[in-house]
Length: 266
Image 1 (cartoon, rainbow, N blue to C red):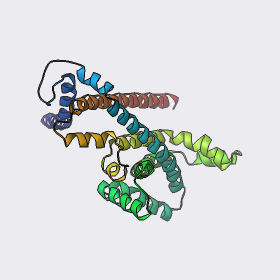
Image 2: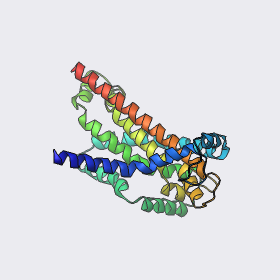
Image 3: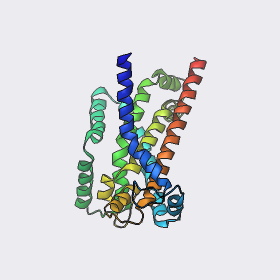
Image 4: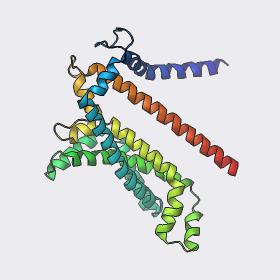
């Protein structure tokens, strides 16, 4: 009983440590005070100012579009790569797996500097294209790591059975393999979107001049203590947090329903 109480206390402390700053941002997004920690009455003024701020809304749109473009490319390439690794010979698959894990373990600043040096070496200016490549590089390995476990869980005889029944390799791939690993593909896509939206380091090294994402704009705003948009960023943070919570709840609900449906059918 005492051990359980200690475990729950440690868990509660950890959650409190992680989420208290976020909850403070959410709470103080409902007051128009310029300084965080100062309460000037309950109000939705910051949210009104946020949605009326054309610059921030444009940055949010650009950030979301960039994340979607990079994630779609990463998901397509990552799924192809995962299938290729899975059906390769053991030595080739092992080598490819190691290469896939290196970008995940590697410090992001190293990746960012490497990309910047490569772009400079090939005389490629920092453009939207270089930024897109940077985001694909950091998100693609996570898609591969999300898809491969689903390939391992799949019944390997399904693909062979489809071929025996007359399906071409491409038809068997789209009709049998992809539907089986679809949850892994979606998980990889969602992870890629999250990583792209959140990234600062690679973005800072590859983005064109004058282009900002949410992360770079927030960082540049914080460097100026009296920046006019700082209070509005509290409201933006609260909205992002709310969206993430809703997405997590929806995904968990869908996964639970799918598990129950499979258990009933089995």
